[in-house]
Image 1 (cartoon, helix red, strand yellow):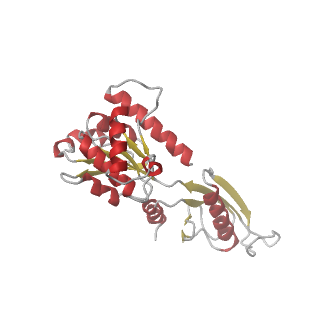
Image 2: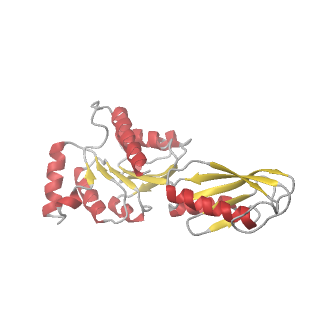
Image 3: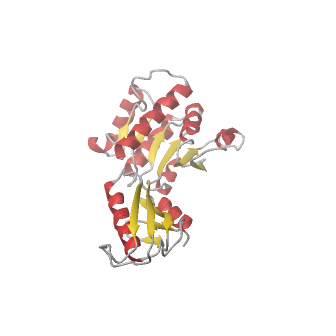
Length: 268
């Protein structure tokens, strides 16, 4: 498997990893500069030459994975029989510099409702390296022309047209997906809230709306949905930063996006 495919596999699994690259070689070494190795929690793909260099790099890569939030590191190795090595002797005669770059877990966000606020929010989130799921029952809001503003997205954008049961998308989302509920229909919002509380493995769940709307939803989730108070408290509402009170769609979107990015940072 190529290192590119290995990185893609970790991304799809939502697993952290480290990209290990031979950054520089002086003299003789098992691999030339540019050789790569991808290290996951329990697997590794590719090679930077085997022996002590590779074994130490894998050990250190897994320490970085465990540390969470670690930055890149450069390690230097002397390949001669006078150096005490952790995993055996390599006496090629040269020196090697190895760069370890942690690969962050790619986050996923699902926006249910791509109306005025939802589209503005999608435009902001599309500039982030994440998987962005856009879900709506209305086909006319998901046309290529309307979503053309996302054509240069950094994010991987997935569009879901769900004319009947948008809540079914919840079970298809990657583990840890953060859910934002902002459809045009309060009944649809309520159904999504109920389904989100019944779906295991989601990240945060946010609901747009007023205190009065949430009071009605909360009562319904308890009496009709059978959810206890602790479970209902998983839903955050209102969403966004409290200090931003503007109500135009673009401002609300900025507020919601900023609050979500803060949640990402708190996760580490």
